[in-house]
Image (cartoon, rainbow, N blue to C red; front, side):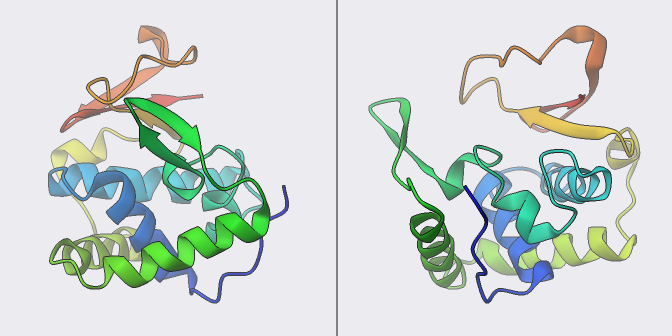
Length: 159
């Protein structure tokens, strides 16, 4: 699947990913998700090196391709065009939610290097994976030897 141009600038798309992945998390959890996206882009880990290419990478962020149906992630966007349309629709919806401003501000602070808290500092430039144990079973890569930090309800890992 090849990423389709979205017409959404990188900082706004980063904020949208934070919104979709972590809007219910504490601020450090929101910032940690932004950091993972930026780390993946920088390392070209499941990424072409851009924010858009990182977020749209196949199966990288569930919200871009999947819906939760009956407690199971179900793929609903099967083509790059469907994925792009889904992301654009979610962008429009997010802007009407009170959490959007917070997610935008935190993503901007992470992007500029201005976000700094003790919990956030636990993450490293190699932190590229995370999951929320309450939301899904542990992925195969989630091992205690690559666990970096627990921030809010999410666990963060090196690859």
